[in-house]
Amino acid sequence: MSDNTTRAAALLADHRDSIDRLDAILVYTLGERFKHTQAVGRLKAEHQLPPSDPAREERQIERLEWLAKEADLDPEFAKKFLNFIISEVIRHHERLQR
Image 1 (cartoon, rainbow, N blue to C red):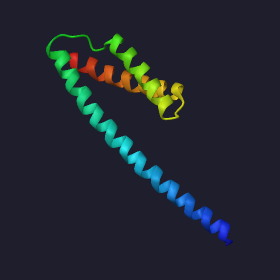
Image 2 (tube, helix red, strand yellow; image 1 turned 120 degrees about the vertical axis):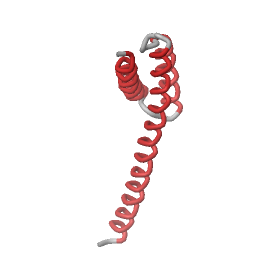
Image 3 (cartoon, helix red, strand yellow; image 1 turned 30 degrees about the vertical axis):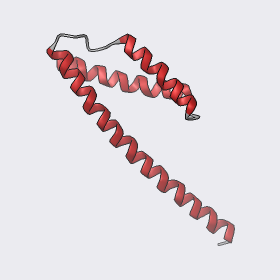
């Protein structure tokens, strides 16, 4: 194996280690986020509030698009990601209201 190949393999391993750590952070962060949205859902159910808040959702999407640009992440990808999360949260909130 050449020195270049050895260095490339080491860099690849470093990148993969970073990706694995970041994946863990994402999963634990989403878990924490859903704990809070479930608490919101219970409050909404207790007080007969609607399961979704379109105005807040729109503000959150705009905020996430701005954050994505700041982070050099494709804003369309960020928007799709947040829309997916919001739809899951609303689904949970609707289930709590039944």
